Image (cartoon, rainbow, N blue to C red; front, side, top):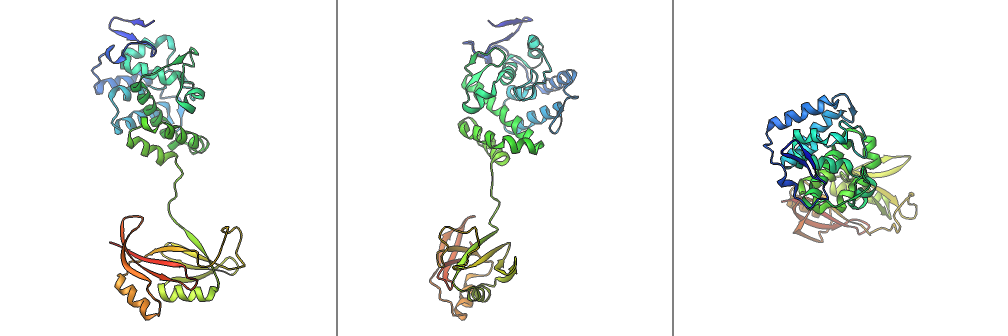
Length: 327
């Protein structure tokens, strides 16, 4: 049953067939957030350690993140107070459940109901499949679509902030959190999904080097040095490579490949695109003078960053080499 709270306020159980949006109409101004901060501080939030400083600092960052994402003021207030009753992962209660009315007076019933939903979430049930069970009452919960979206938005802001301030937590739980948010991506605004990926997804920054298996290493070195201006280097006890820009090509002698290697390392199986800052007509003239046939081009193509213009040649092992400039 809903609990009556000092006249105009009611705490509405999330399972009740009542829209919480119509229960309490709050004039959510900056004063509301100031009062909420003062309330949290009075309950000791500024003295409780938390990744990134204190619990109060964490709560401020969560609310600020929700604001940046365009969340409603109800959701922002719930985010600011989301740890008031503790959580399944941080059981430091600022307020007893018997005192829910006190929080309602500060942030309003709709925001408080979201705080309760967040606090009562049994993560062993919710995180795998977004099924809700109230860890305080052991009863199943059926949030509305709006409540689900608010819950997952607050969850994202909270988990992202914790991960950004604690590398060990990110390393231990990042993969599971990314999988959880990916399964529920349809509930996340695009800007939030991008923040989730930035924080939890494994991302490749660029290509460092690749390996060519070649029939004749000296001949390959001569070709790439003389035709394309790459710099030959020797490393690791006599191994050979060709350096260009911030990348390099390591060379393996066919039949004497260095382990581990590709499943079928054979000469002539590569197809590479190399970017040049030199005009392509200058490149073409240089290649022609060096006796390197141009197989095709210049022709329009699409590179990793947009449109490019390319010409194609073959190296001594007949690997296809595309030389391109961005348009």
